[in-house]
Amino acid sequence: MKVEVVMPQLSDLFFASSNINKYKEAKKILDEFGINLKFFKCDLLEIQSNSLKEIAKNKAEQAFQQCKKPVLVEDDGIFIDSLKGFPGPYSSYVFKTIGNKGILKLVNQNRRAKFVSIISFYDKKIHESFESKVNGIISKTVNGIGWGYDPIFIPSKSKRTFAQLKNKNEISHRYKSLKKFSSWYLRKFE
Ligand code: IMP
Image (cartoon, rainbow, N blue to C red; front, side):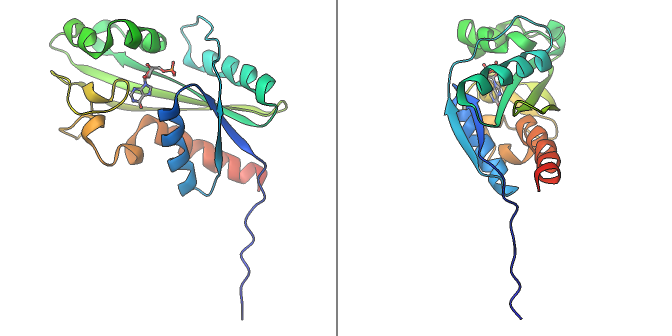
């Protein structure tokens, strides 16, 4: 007997960002969960806030105004213990200004840090956000070729930076928050 598998018909889902690296990772992760993610390249204004969630929610609304389709946006930050959580919500600006070498100069003996990701979904009616983190440490030197802070972040239980790991997409802050999003989305829109 032939069994027909009927896949849920989900409407188009876009990832709004100016950062193609984030999209590529998100796409690969959501492919695994059977969700087809498209790219909506755009520049979104970042409100000034100490809350990544508020920033992400605001960006999701802006993105929806532009693309008029259900959208995901992501806001991230790297929080360094010895710098009292800095750069946190200012990670993007700090990366553009002092970069990884500048961060290495600031960090002292306590090298503990965490990456936090907020994924925010908006389709005009529903607004949902999903948060995850990965704990780790800041390396002593820049190691590996990768984007953003990947060459200086060593996740817990590893000796290598995100930039040196083949399985970053299986353990990252992005993976964890997208996994939470997927189970919510598939249940909701199935
Ligand atoms: P935003 O969410 O676009 O504001 O990004 C915050 C900053 O964190 C950017 O400078 C990114 O380069 C950096 N960032 C976010 N996620 C990652 C990651 O997975 N690896 C490396 N850097 C990241």
